Each structure stands twice: as structure tokens, then as C-alpha cells.
Length: 402
Ligand SMILES: Cc1ncc(COP(=O)(O)O)c(C=O)c1O
Image (cartoon, rainbow, N blue to C red; front, top):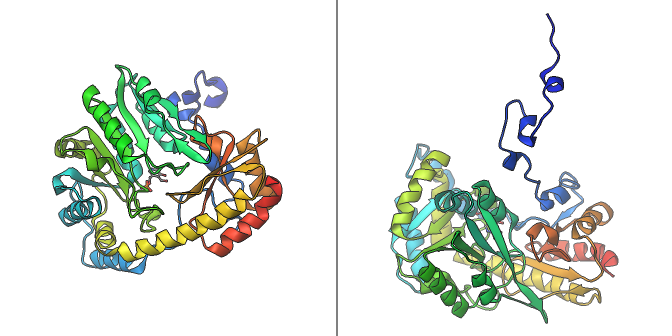
């Protein structure tokens, strides 16, 4: 006996019904990030200079790999601590004290499988459906998705770009908060703009969150990639150990470890203890042998970091000089991160122009519209690359920007 295929009998009434069995509409209809959309046009083409993602072309330094290999060979291959191996948590606490000149105990540190995971698990812990999170924008798009997947509503408050500088109006930021707001999300130094929040504004924002009993989620993954001082101002410098502050940090950017998927959170100790539960049912902890590599990075990584910063500084300057000479382009000299986020006058769609760059010039850039409110009109270029590749990329893209 034959029967008609199920697909012809059951036309999907909802997007989530289009699968072998139903999935959540919210996830089924989530768009591919626009950066992914552009990257798919040239991902496999070795001639494309890929400046669309946020990573360096440098490999992870050997001393970090050696430490992980040694731990692997020694058998650190078992289930491990939910909040990270104790020696790494202690080393991160010492690093925090050294870099920021503050007291920090290891009970405030939780190691997780990337900065992204810190954000995602913090969202699991603080957002009920219908709650909102106020996000400073333009913002890294994954944050918006992490809020939405929990049924939360992101509320974007845009930075202003005037006279070559980005700035944030704190009154507008605070006005966006209501009684369903669970957190302010601030990424400083900012991807994509390179904006750095002042220490005074950080203090004001943290005081505001304390008084309203909402979380301040501070994404500081670019804290060490700064060019006008040793480290960017941190919310940690204004916080006591029990303040409503969750700081997101990552091994990815400073030590060229994007593929390792390791990051850490600094938070009140009891928040870290509570988060061990979602860690348990999401990943059950990060691989112990990789954490030994991270331990080497945090304890012996300053020299490499210096090299990374100098290389990025030089790359940023090459790109800045070339872009600033183009009459249609408005661009700020980057003080931090490894991105240039530049405005192109007369551009109607950054997504369409980014696609043309890949197809016609073989240079991959990220469209500003990928970064939410306030992002259209801009393109993002990651300059954590060799000077030669950056010069070639600029030679290729300049004709389309004239
Ligand atoms: C602003 C921002 N936060 C967090 C992350 C997460 O980094 P990772 O998940 O590699 O630790 C990134 C990565 O691009 C980022 O740009």
C-alpha cells in the first residue's frame, strides 16, 4: 500500500512546522547573520582577503599550544569542574588584580566555553519571557539573538557619531529602562565602533544599575586591545564583590585563541555558583586540557599581547590613513579593538555594497546593517592582519569607495 509523502499532505502552517517534527518558530525564522550572508559568497575562495570576522591572522602562540598538549598527554581528559579548573580561576583572579589594580578573589571567576557562552548563560539566568535588555548599539549581533532566544526583548540605544568620535548619551540609555528591564548590556571597547566608555560614565552606569537592582552586563573582551593606554577602563574598577556586575572576558582576541572557545566571567561569587547549574546542563564544563593552555596564556602571555597590540596598531593606522583620504568616507582613528567602522556617504545598502566588494574586488567586509540600529551607512573592516594584506585590500576596495 502506498501513501502520499507527508510533506505534500502537511503544508507547514507555521515556519517551525517545516521540519521533520516541529521546532520553535523563533529559532526557525532567525535570519542568518548578515556577516554570514556576505561571507558565504566568498568563504571557500582563497583569493578573497577576509576582513569580515573578528580575528587575527596570527596562529595561537606555541607556548600556549605546548601547555595544552602537555595536559592532554598527561591525561586531563575527564569531566572537570563546572566553573573551571582551580589553578586557572586563581591565575585569572591574580591577573585581574594585576591589570586593574583591584582586589579580586577566585570565587568571582567562572571559566566557560567562550565569551559568547558567558553571554548566553547569563541570559538563561536572568531573562524571563517578556523581560527586556537595554543594549548599546551598534552591537555585535549575537547578543541580540541570545536575548531573543530566551523570549527577551532587546532595546537598542544608539551611540552618536560626530566629528570623528563616537559617544553615548547616558540620559537616553537610562530612559530606555523600565520595570521589565533586567540588564544594561554595554560592550566597551566596542565591536564594531571602537568606542571606549569613560571611567566616569562607567561609574554612573553601575550606580544606576545598583539603584534599580538590574544587572550591568559589561562585555570587555577587547579590554587589552587598546592603543592609547595599557588597558581600557573597566567596570570592575568601580564594583564591590557583590555588585550586580557581570563582566564578559575571553581568551579569543588577546592571545589569538578564537578557535579554542574559552572565556571567563567575573561576577559576584553567588552568581557564579548559581551559574554552575546552567553550565552543567549546557556543556558540563570546558575541556580541562584546553584550560591548561589558557593558564599559560594568562600567566605568560604579556609579551605576545604586546606584539599583537603593536601589529594591530600598525594595521589600524594603514587602514585609517587610506580611508581618511577618500572624500566619501568618514572614519575615526581607532583607539581600541581591531576594527574600523567607517561611514560611506551616498551608500544606500551596506549589505549590497559588502556583497559587491566580495564579488568584484575579492575583499570581505562586514555590512554595518548587521550591527543593528545605527549600523546602516557603515562598513566594518578587521585590521588584525599583516600590513601587506591590508595594503592589498585597500588597493582593491578604494575604486568602489571613490
Ligand atoms: C563584542 C564581542 N563580545 C564577545 C565576543 C565573543 O568572543 P568569544 O566567543 O570568541 O570568546 C566577540 C567575538 O567576536 C565580540 O566581538
